Every structure is written in structure tokens, then in C-alpha cells.
Image: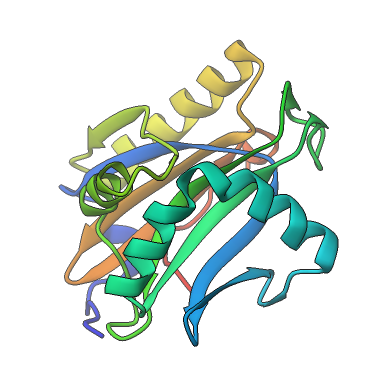
Length: 195
């Protein structure tokens, strides 16, 4: 795994940053083990009810998931399980349940796939995914922090999403910052994504 000698908070300067909506659901990880797709939630095998629901929801694009994970068995696909009705933190009301991918982690390289590459992979394999809503490039941390405030205000004005996740790639590492509405006065620090 490549790593950067730069302090994490400075990696955003002059980087292309992709802003994705922070959806309020349950984290799901799809991975291949002995030819079978396993469903994890929060680093443990999902309970049977969640497994049944996820399998039902990914049925329309299961072939794409199978192909992607068979060709790249080292990938973990991170998804958000959005259930019908009120979301866990009460930020969203979903008309129907859905499963939507938001990241791919390469377990051999021990790094996340670059944002622009993961979007292409999801499109190629027909896997529904969170699309970015904005691309930015900041010349300073101060400029980035102003943009964080702008994105929080945007979420408030629109009555959702819960917030945004800013993602960028620098020196072989993917970084992210979660920007949540309720954290307006506690500005998050950029950090390297952990597994």
C-alpha cells in the first residue's frame, strides 16, 4: 500500500474532490469467498433477515456483482441498505427499499479504488451506485472549509441528505471527509479511509 508523507489534512489542497450524498441507511459489504457472495454488516456476517433483504434487492444486478467479484476476488463492495420508510437516524423517508454501492476496497493493494475509476466500474457492471453531486478543487484548507459550510447549508436547504462525503485520491491513498448537518461547528479533519 502506498502512503503519503503529507499530513492528511493538507492532501485536499489542489486535489479533485468528489462530493457524494451521505445516505442514512445500514452499511453492507459484499465480498466473494469460495465462489459465494458473502454479506457483511459492520465487520461481521449479516444476520439472516438482512441477508435475505440484501439478496432480494441485489437480484436485478446480481450478475454484475458476480462478474465483478469473480474477475476481482480481492474487491469488497461497500453499499448502503436503504429500507422503506424512515431511515435509522430519521434523516430520510424512502418510498421503497434499495441497495446502493458507494465504494470498492482492494484487499490486495489495501486501498480504495479512485473515485472516477469506481464510478466507471459500477456503470460497466450495471451496479447502482451513489453518484457524485459536485466536483471541487481547493487551493487552501480555508477554501475547503468554506466549501464544507456551503455543502452543509445545501443539505439543510434541501431537507437532506444527511450530509455529504468528500472523497479524493492523493499519493496512492483515498481520503474522505464526512460532512454531516449536525456537525456544522465541529469541522471534520481529513483522514485516510480505514477498512
